[in-house]
Image 1: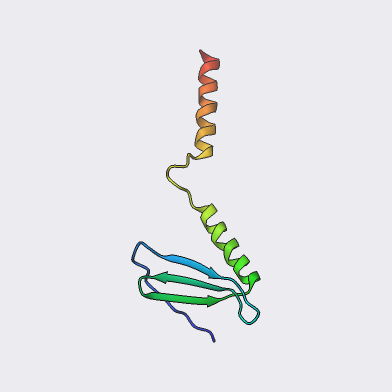
Image 2: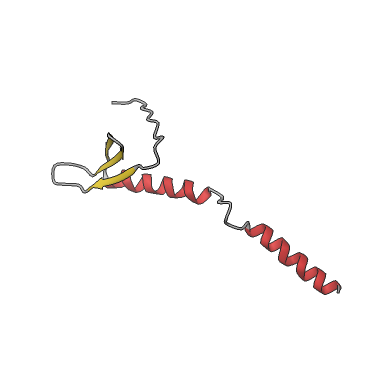
Length: 86
C-alpha cells in the first residue's frame, strides 16, 4: 500500500519507542503524542537507513552556538598577521 500521511505534531512531548523484533513481527517504530500513536513496521535494514538519513540531516544543521570553523580560522590568521606587522 502506498500513500502519504501527514500528522501535525504540535505538542512538545513526542515519544519514540522501538519494539524489538519477534519471531513473527518486524521491529516496530512507535511515534506517540498525547493519545495518538503511529506505528511503522520496519526491517532492521530499513531502520538503519532511517537512522543514517536522520543523522545526515542533523549533521548538516548549523547550530547557532557552534562556532563557524572558517570564521575561527580567519580570526586566527588575521591575529597572526597583525602580530607579524606589530
